[in-house]
Image (cartoon, protein in one colour):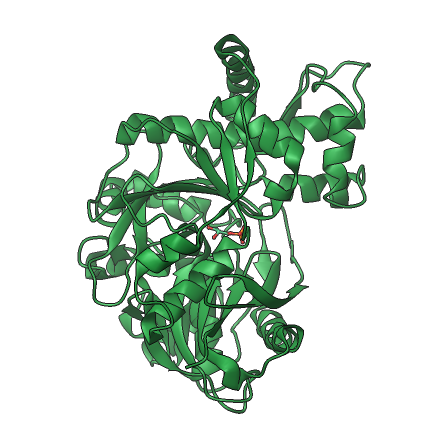
Length: 496
Ligand code: G3P
């Protein structure tokens, strides 16, 4: 059997296809961005047809970069930006409108109303999620209520709902399904039964027939169509939300395993084993993964909406850097932020605050400050937001953190990783393969078809690539954390 496994990572800003070998090493990749559609304040959309077009392009380009054909692939795994919601017509394959992206806050009113009507505790208990605009259920309700014809078509069985994994798999194979990790982000799935919950479907007014079948994260779902981008039939055998895939890619299979992925946002996921741990400190309870017919593993997650996208904002909206890498050189040109703190609460604040009324703030400015201070404050914000979540996890799970495993694009910014170690007071460690999201999807697919015999082999593949040791004392950390907390205070109650 071929030992190459492919992975499609359909992310928030781009889609990539990567090929890995048995050692978990990268063989080739291709990546393309898609448009961020921002029709009004708080709204973020993607054109799902464009995303599918980019997906096809990156598959073809990635196979070429790897110097292989689809016949060399044992399987393909899918991983995706989670919660982003699309509804399409099964008869034509056409979406009814743009996908509503996870960062979009238009459904804030819907979830607030559910809370006011006294349904908040039911949602929290059954799904592990606080009612928030972030999750897919409210977005689906918005589409059903606001887009012409969708509700009637859903009731007639023509309209299909999906997160981006479902959309990609449907286009690749014709199957309408999702996995437990993606379903656990909808506010519609019962965390214990791992099935759609009729009471929740009633609350959100969602016809069950438009929902995909919920499957494990690692099994053969179907074959790619020979007339699709692979040009051959390849088993699609892995499906995980990107943060869950990164946990698998980091080989965090034991309870207590923790990783922090620095992408558009930051997502810390702590494996809690087969136990469902309810957070007392603003974290989400979610499904970590389910490998075939093994019991599901659960996780506590701290989701932070804006981290890498704060750097993009410096580049695209403020124009103070030309590319993301320049954020490091510019920030390194000063020793500190010159008293400035930047809280990029562009989508409100997610974990551990869950304040949709928050908006971004830059505080502590004086005439002395330059763009270099602002760049450094952006890096510090990334690290302090992660520290807020780590502190909540320590409190919830009673763990002592020996070190923090990291991955994702921002980990290439060495200054940022040094600041992270300094803020937390523990070493920060990046594996040799920093693309753990795609790797985790490939692992899930490869496990299903026998490329890897079990998770022990994946743990053996993990190798340290870089390490940053803290260079601060407890007093410095305390002062920095207090300053950050003060800045966060300033962002609250900004919108009603
Ligand atoms: O929950 C949203 C998350 O899955 C998005 O991840 O890497 O596309 O920012 P990313």
